Image 1: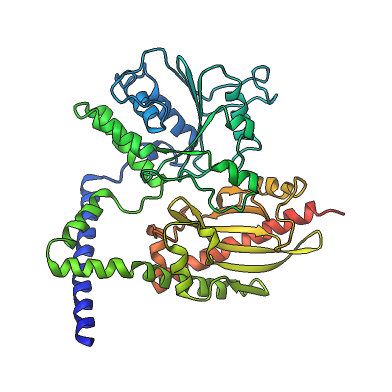
Image 2 (image 1 turned 45 degrees about the vertical axis):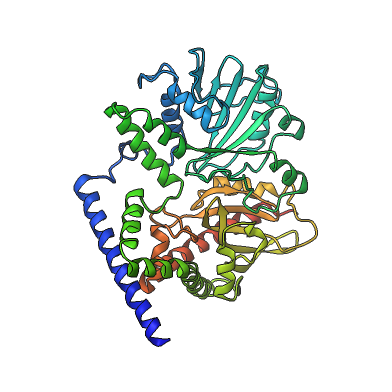
Length: 468
């Protein structure tokens, strides 16, 4: 048995050394050919939604400078399931509008709205709401649904575009959902037949029922791949779309390039020893992730005990983390790893908690921080309590995708000092540092500082809003 284990270790080390060599080679290529240079990020921060909206409008416009007429628009409508005929071309009567103005007079909700994109065709209208980092406005998606329902076109489609393709927190009223189509579209590549999930937010039963009618609208990555396949002989158009696709991959959370993945697969399949080692690595990967996570939670809890009197780790073993990371099913029904801190922040006589845990968005599990109240029969915070969330939105907290969910006053993905976030399932480059003792402690100290800032900010906000 010991000889077999030694042989396996030797094969794994040999394979990992080859993979490390490949990664160094890929890094040299990136430096030599400047493949990391992207003119989009050179001109504007990657998360500026308006820049993405303008780019999408430029590609979708049938009269745009790309010179491809309705080609890109047709491929987009096919991606979201709004145009099934793959051979027939669109006529030229389609119009694409960015920052479309829905005035009060034409809006059944009596509120001016500005959806990011609206596509108008002879007998269909598509409204696209693009979310990269910003949260949803109050009643934003319900208002768009009501406006679409008031249109006369036979097909009325609302596309909710986010990095991971998750569902909006608020859905259009049930009557509205019966006459419009709601698609959740991801930046990242999605699996065929992928169902839309609500990220385990613990929604009320009517939301849970309604979410079953929401369809997956594919991905920007899939659409851009389709566009590239049709313009092999147009270098300017091809280069623009290729660079934008690279940025879309980053927003969608992809951690390894296609070239690197293919190169590693080639090495792993070149002989029986490498292939056997690759299978052993593949089989052990979930446990390796769990071991790294488990050390991280233990040391993070130790760091936070200097600030909070009561700090509890939510999972006691690596096996529970492995169970949580397994694909399939609803992860909110499994023990979720994390750290929970009891604070001296009080609201209506209750001490509130600060909780750090991975929150599922599509295939990523981003490190998320929350302010929440204790478990009780009344699961949902009321409109008066939502004032805390609104103040938090204005406070400049180091969070992205800030939100407000049942039992939770504030939820957001925690940003590190360099602006990155931790994906604790796929282990994006910042999260890979957790495997190194020194780098892990640097990340933990960073998170500890952010948690203390979050605590100080929320204590000030809650105290200012506490009922008399």
